[in-house]
Length: 103
Length: 150
Image: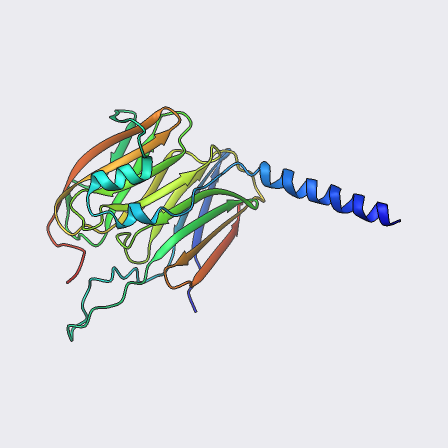
């Protein structure tokens, strides 16, 4: 079971700064384990960010995004009580999501 | 009565259609070809087709000059251009140069940060797509320990 997306949001005036962390191995498919076996590729392919249910960012990633990916962005017109939801899908079809309410 | 139900269905259908039409972010599906491209030019071509690509000082790329650990290189891309539709990060020397592509709608600032892996010292390119074309900035990052393989 994939761990949830961690979201930290800060509202300053109308601008919400969103920082997110997604626990994930992000295996490239080229790395070898200590026994010399290739570790199969396992990485997040698509990240979707929603603001009050409306999709505002869709990120497509390759395996060259770092392990336990970090992603930060800003929502330009946000207010207290708005919801921000971030979800991902990886190349093996696993998914995870995280949600927060702006304070 | 029968007519009423049909009418209701029709109205519901129309409402559903309008709801679809007003979703502002029309994100393109993942461009597999671009992520599998092994040369930066192929990646750019498959992302942007024939759109003109030009250097711009309105795209700012923040990366460290020297990355001690190639597995975690912080990248921030910011742009003062209007109508940014997408931001892409390309590492010239990586086996698959395209690292990430962010499609966004106007509700989001053209200012994103993430962390990427770099196999070796390389130029990093930030490509910002607007209606006017594609605008890029590049910067070199020296990597002391590579982040791919091992």
